[in-house]
Amino acid sequence: MASSSIIIPPFLSASISRRNLLLSTTIATVSPSPQIPSSPDVTITDRVFLDFSLCPTYFRSDPSATLSSTTPCSDSTPLGRVVLGLYGRHVPLTVSTFKLMCTSSSSASYKNTPIHKIFPGQFFLAGRQGLRRDTAEVGPLLKSLPRNTDVVNSKSFLIPHARPGLVSLCLSENDDDDDTRLDPEYRNVEFLITTGPGPCPQLDGGNIVFGTVLEGLDVVTSIAAVPTFKPSEKIRQFNDFAEFLGDERAQNARSLWNRPLKTAFISDCGELKVTKPSLSPSLP
Image 1 (cartoon, rainbow, N blue to C red):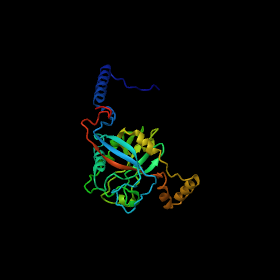
Image 2 (tube, helix red, strand yellow; image 1 turned 30 degrees about the vertical axis):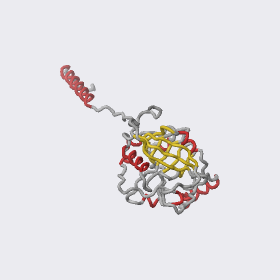
Image 3 (cartoon, rainbow, N blue to C red; image 1 turned 120 degrees about the vertical axis):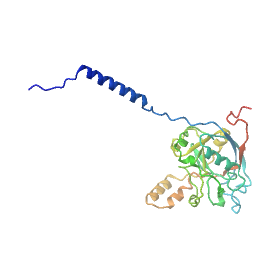
Image 4 (cartoon, rainbow, N blue to C red; image 1 turned 30 degrees about the horizontal axis):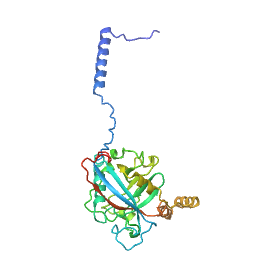
């Protein structure tokens, strides 16, 4: 039995073809093209300085002193000055808060606070908040400090930690005092600086790069060379097992790891007023 078929007249076939072609052309015209993410604006809008000094031991010699009021030790050695260029167009709130922490005269300042963790060949941490007088942590922040909405903007995390000398707001690496973080007025001001020699891809996506070292990378390298507390392999294995069992003391013990055996601290800090902060520091 012969199969039946429908014969479409030539004029109708041509009409359908022209209509389909016109429809496909219209769809192609109005379809949005895929958007390419714009590159972060790394224009340097501000400059600040951090002066670093080194104590022969880690703990403060005067535990009765108020937070951020005196130097951690009386026999410190100057390490030098680090000049940072800040990306104020990329993350304006992060930059404004960092500037405030560098210029404030209260205990809510980076002045006389230590580098509390050093990860050799990667980065160091500073600006930890807490209430321990023996470690000169950053004191209670100003209540008027605005909330940093940069931390909820995905574009803030686009700059990778690809080289030494990048300054970044600590989020995934933050280790502020637990009681401090429970405060409804808590603001995160802890930061890190990459020390190299290589990149730190483990920091990408979890911390916000907001500036770069313009001068004093040799000072950053000197800080990275300060010896730190390193537990033996047996202690690490025991700690891993204790953490597996849910022992909270395991995390407390880990807080001592990578702590410098000498106190490198920010002896002074402030803003550098220049006409054109985006220019190379070697230019007039």
